[in-house]
Amino acid sequence: MRTRPSALVCVAFFLLSVSAPVLAHHGFSVEFDKDSPLTLTGTVTKMEFMNPHIYFYLDVKGKDGKVVNWAFEGGPPNVIYRQGWRKDTLKAGDVVTVKGFRAKDGTHLAACSTVKLPDGREVSAGSGGVSQNAYGSAAAPDGKK
Amino acid sequence: MRAITKNFFRVPTVCAASLFLILPFVVACGSHAAEGTPQPAAAPDLNGVWSAPFTPDISKTLGHQPPFTPYGATRFAKEDEIDDPLTKCLPIGPARGIQAGIMPFQIVETPSVFTILFENQHTFRIIHTDGRSHPKDLDPTWFGDSVGKWDGDTLVVDTVGLDDRTWLDTAGHEHSDELHLVERFQKVDNNNIKWTVTFEDPKYFTEPWSITLPITRQNTEIMSYSCEENEKDRAHLRRGKK
Image 1 (cartoon, helix red, strand yellow):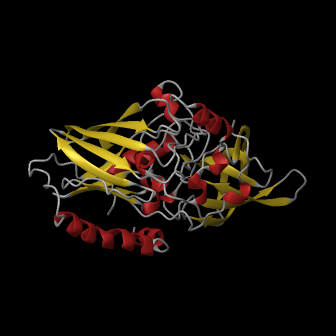
Image 2: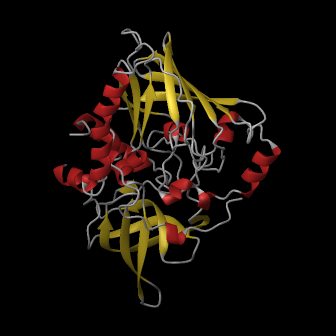
Image 3: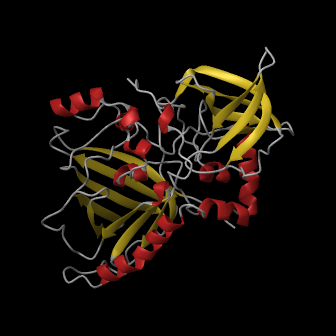
């Protein structure tokens, strides 16, 4: 086992309160717009718990009734694994609310900072908009303090 | 847990296997080096998994921009994060690997080599501590040629022969293949190392400059990482950092 049970209690608490900036292989600001925050609620269609970032997809119904499939990028899987995430933390069919920041290219892609899970917990996805990395050092979403 | 581990290791298996297969070879080569003398048996034990604070802009730690030459200043002004070698999944480089923050590294110490295994991209540094000198003719490589010597509780590491494609940080501080690194890994106690790195590069900087970061022991193990496994970002990256 990579993480001791006692440590899991700590990371579970950690999950509820903080999140980490993107840093696996690119800076935040080269892809996402910190001035374009969004909050979307929808149904999970797919989860990719893979390197260099996790991706999950959400069907979101717009005001016009049209459904758009959004892609959300989170942190590297090993980083958020240490924060308590598992590959089945999000499952197809889950209805969740996601906070994040839109991609600069205007596509239906966003960096995910937090996810409100079906059980009501709001957890960090390790990406964007927040204030701490996995080891507690302060940093803005673009990696600049 | 098994399922997660299986998933993590599915694609990077070759990379990970290469890393750990090469270690015994390197250790063996180091222990039979003709020149030099292995480090004393009483060298401080720094084995374990460690991490330093994520340092995406090295000038913030320094308190100001490095002492650029005119060429270095021009290069930095033009640089854009989209050109970061990490966005192309290229190796992180020796000092930036220490500063990666969210991804820890493991130190594996033997009498003749001091090895740093980076979780980031599963790259590694071999620091020879058997008393050898740098080779006379060096082709630049991603992690250069490193030799180390113990000075009491401090391992002093000298690195040259670095490929100029690595960056010093995410902010776009670059260097040439004349970069010379001197690092000091000072054991403070069993859980803390004081790391000081000095950057010397006459093409980019008018004088040597240094930063110091705390390195702390982590209650974890280094895990798998493959930059290419599900890379989807490159198509969305946009210029315009500065």
